Image (cartoon, rainbow, N blue to C red; front, side, top):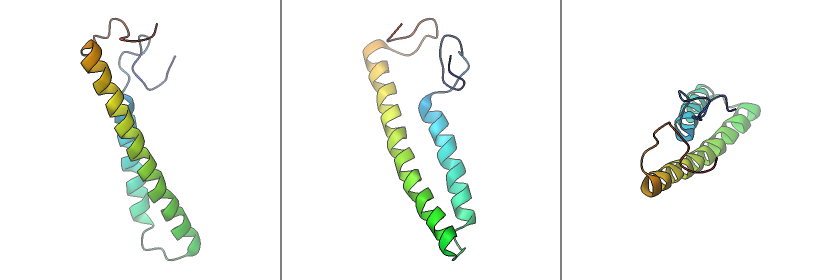
Length: 86
């Protein structure tokens, strides 16, 4: 059973892209707090956060593409049964 994603056992869960958007927003907020800290450690963490933001954006795009693929092939999710898999 998943803790966060929509499944038969968790119908009130989130779509993957929605969770990733929330995480991206949180990282962006944290990154802005250290933008003006010129210490090397802070700049290193900021650079890592910027790279992570790019990777999360790529993951959001992939998750959206999967959602569109499923909707195109099988219609919107009904919540009664999975569109693919068991």
